[in-house]
Image 1 (tube, protein in one colour):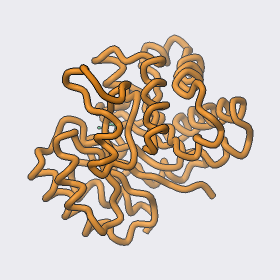
Image 2: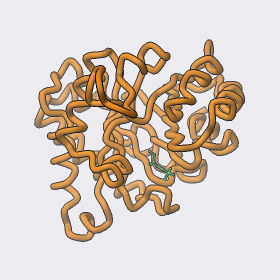
Image 3: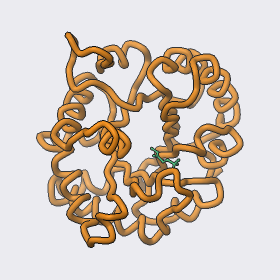
Length: 250
Ligand code: 13P
């Protein structure tokens, strides 16, 4: 049995005070959770959420970080800053970063390496656009994002990596990939990891599904062999929605 991780990506929502109040209510609602639970607030909201979830089951993640350690990089936030603030895991390569801010696989790979060097776990996001899927390029795109995103990452470091499969066309659209479609994409990702690192790394890798995950579809998704968690956007902003997702098996 693989471990399970359910993470909430708050995107650009929740001020520091809103985030703290929300996180306190969420911590209470998921205190009996049996899976790894992560919330990823915006940078300025991280510190108040770290304080609010102290002593609870909730871990705090970041949604992004700089590909540099320190220096003249206006507007950027470094891995050591995140670490010192109480972050344990960072989301990298989200499709919104790729599409809206031009992040390339090589750039994302630099961040993955830096995060690991700084002792942060990583959620590496991959996923195809509708255009790519319709052009029959699903596997080509996933393979490129996995191989390039993980370039020069050792088998040992893979224990700190989670891969999130987020088909771009399912994000925030209300369209979820069917459990079978998601499962076959996950199986493909796992087979690529097997080619790169061998069976034991591939079998223990957590692969999350992301894209319109809700209380109503989480059980069917989590029942699939290769789906080991969820990366949740919109539904992670409400305790009524996110708590039942985290507690899907309780
Ligand atoms: P939604 O759950 O809002 O579709 O967002 C998914 C996502 O992008 C999580 O990173």
